Length: 159
Image (tube, rainbow, N blue to C red; front, side, top):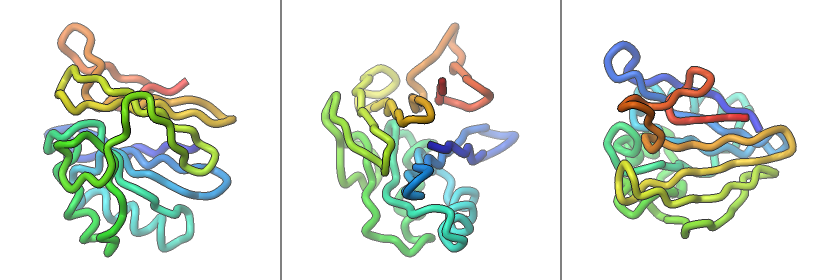
């Protein structure tokens, strides 16, 4: 599994989208791609160069800075039928995993964990393959009023 952070609103909002790629199949998910002008060019390059096979948009919760760019991103990529996985309130959502439901991205096993903390539709995604583990939390993990950062990335912890 390879994870690439994509900065959004640097200097003003400092948020990130994450591109998760299965090493063997090149299948990929884009997580919380809220700002298509910054995310779409990265995805277009990766798709056109054969680096990824984009399989879905995944959202941790419905707030605009995580899920607000879903429909525009699909339009920009020319992929109107790409699934959108997330909570029931996420823009354009087509699938909401049940609490504890597992699904795969190539060899990556993903478990959706409902975490109705920051929002009622928050879902954390625990991902694991033979190379490592990661959890994408959106805005669920906070310490002393500040978002927890692991390895310099917002809302993701890897180990």
